[in-house]
Amino acid sequence: MAKELGIAHEFHTPDEVTRLYPLVSLKGVVGALYTPDDGHVGPAMATQSLAIGACQRGAEINCHTKVVDFAQRPGGEWDVEIDKGTIAAGVVVNATGLRSDEIAALAGNFLPLVAIQLQHLVTEAIPEVADLETELPVLGGLDGSFYLRQELDGILTGVYEEKPVFWAIDGIPPPRLWSGHFARKPGARRKKRRRCPSPRARPRLGGDQEYQPSVAPPDAPPTPKA
Image: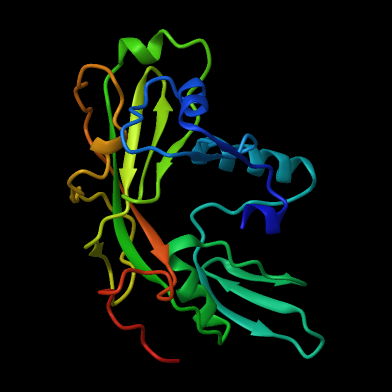
């Protein structure tokens, strides 16, 4: 897939994996795929940066504004009805995350999405991580569907559970905080865990993520038909 998409990638032997990720256990590892141009970004900082750049180029951002309805004009332009009035737009971009299906429905389109609760665990500082001269690359395991990445001087880990918790099947409620779960996959992360003392985990971070039913787990609830 990386080759078809033109993404830089390299295949590495176990010894080369140790060079890239010195804290990994090589038990059961026969090789790895490395994408040197991959990375991660803080979503809050990225959003603010994009917003600042957009405003510098003449965009207007309306916070705390609810989209109520859409109406397309004969010429193709749109009237976007919000709770503060109406905005005329030549193009409407639906970038509303978990609520993308609701916004699509306002425009008469059907977008099948399933919300799943996901969680991350973040460790406290790990001396072996703090002593590294460069940041660790993101480590993912396809056999256990997990990933690890460096978070300051600790490690952030997340998994895609075999039996996830589906959320808000009947509609996304107003923003809220929830205390979710963290389903364990026995052996999945232990195979690749770091060779250092077990660190303490900081409080868990919860969040929801949307999936199309075609890539959701087999036991996902049925998607309503349009």
